[in-house]
Length: 202
Image (tube, rainbow, N blue to C red):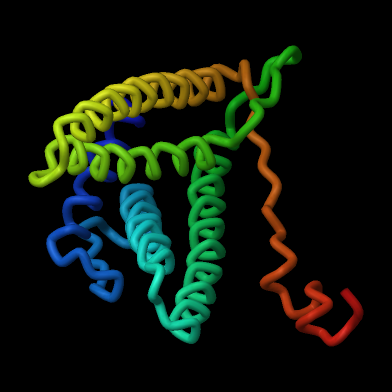
């Protein structure tokens, strides 16, 4: 099994596990050994699944503004958790490939493996929900047909992205690409960097 195949298997499992309760407050029961790569991948997708549904909930037209603000704050925290998890996955790759001899003409990729995996995780959610729309009872035939077309596009996108991720890892292993990542350093969540939080001027 390739790395991307393992990712997609874990992500699909996690998405299905989430929808057993379909509840943003349900506890995550990660089946993998803690702090392993598979554990990180499952945790990452669980964060994405919860946030996906929070984004749906906050768009309810009649939502109470106080509830909406609480959900917005929760989404903000989720975004930080998502970023932290991506950086943990990239740290795993940095350790794994630390002994690779980088070729003199090696190049840097536009994104790290973990940020590509982040997109793969979101794709698993898009595929699950688009498939549900393509088969939704009560929807019009036109709606199901349109969604079926979108589903095929998403599946093709996952195939393409999966192949690109596996190719990138192969190139890193050969030393043709070198791995380097910068922490996101989000400023709005940091009380020492956000002027609104530390009391300075905007």
